[in-house]
Image 1: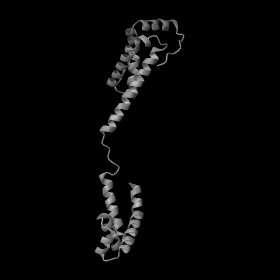
Image 2 (image 1 turned 30 degrees about the vertical axis):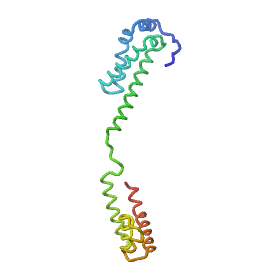
Image 3 (image 1 turned 135 degrees about the horizontal axis):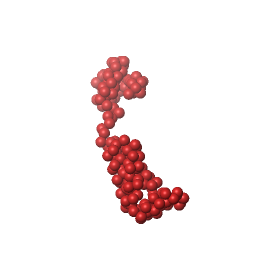
Image 4 (image 1 turned 90 degrees about the horizontal axis):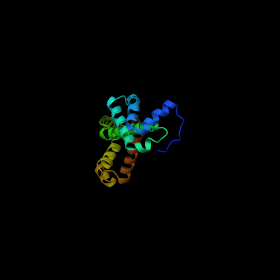
Length: 179
């Protein structure tokens, strides 16, 4: 933290500042209630505010030889407390993200809806197109093998498969956009 330029304090402020410079205890007694009140308003949790306040004062105490000579040790205290608050808040949000099991985008309900949409889309195909798509895409037969099963040429099989895929894509495009 950079040292701030000296500021002119009123005489009573200068006396309090001189007390702070001599003892950390005087600084703590003078500032802890105000800091706690501010942190309580920010956190809305008495225990959280207490912990952050204690951590901020602990950090101040560890560096008191340098902090006591700053032009505004109260500003340093509040900045330290706000940094601690933000750090705790970030850690809590990261922990929440790791612990919470958010439903994947393809949850069970949308999978069921997609299956129903596929069944309806398949119903709109001709019987040969349905057979072609099931044999080649679902059961992974080659065009030659599927053509033999249906008694048609491999080229005709590829044509039925291609047309079936295009019709399914056109029908299911709107369904996929809704989910």
